[in-house]
Length: 315
Image (cartoon, rainbow, N blue to C red; front, side, top):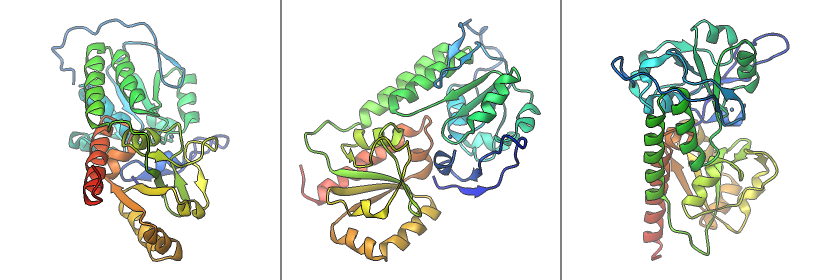
């Protein structure tokens, strides 16, 4: 998901807010990070530690404010959509969230204005300093840090506990686990070299330690991005000339595809074509938002690669 960057207002002179985004949710990765009324009383759960190490009291109250599209989808998938008091402008799935009040994830006053009982944030685009300030003001806040498909299942279970619906969390986690297992390709001794390109100008890729590294691995590919340079390092274009590189996966956001078209007409792009590097444009929202639709992205990769292998005459 390639996002169009718009300037967000600063919280104060000491805490500038990074650019917010518009579209499916991907560029935030680069620039930062229904229970009905007749349901039985929420099961009491001790304080839960979120995925960045902060303890959150459980169960949370009825007013939930989400700060990113991926966690908005996660809350909805847990059956707690009726508790959403506000969602970010970029949240557009499921369609039912389009009519909900909007919040500026980079503005503490905007968040507080919705009187949240719980704020749900994501390392996929939210400024951790904003979340820390909310915690310092006494607002319960849960942060999801989904760096793998296993961590996605964990996030579902943890958030289910915090919402006071642990059974819903377990059930969602199990569904995500089954869908992931069904879409994961068998392990092979040799794996085609691959890159997950987040952005083309400058060239930004997904490194080990990211959910997109896990996506490549579960698709039977070997991630050629270097480790130790951060989750999404900026690399020199020459990395695209690596002889081991056979597959590039990139979100199919229009801006991203336009940049790719420019690359294709350059000497570098022609060299890549001569070396038969296959570029797979993947559905932007599913592949970019580390939320409950991630297994769909993995299934897409399975089918895309199966088609490539069929055309190449591979077993």
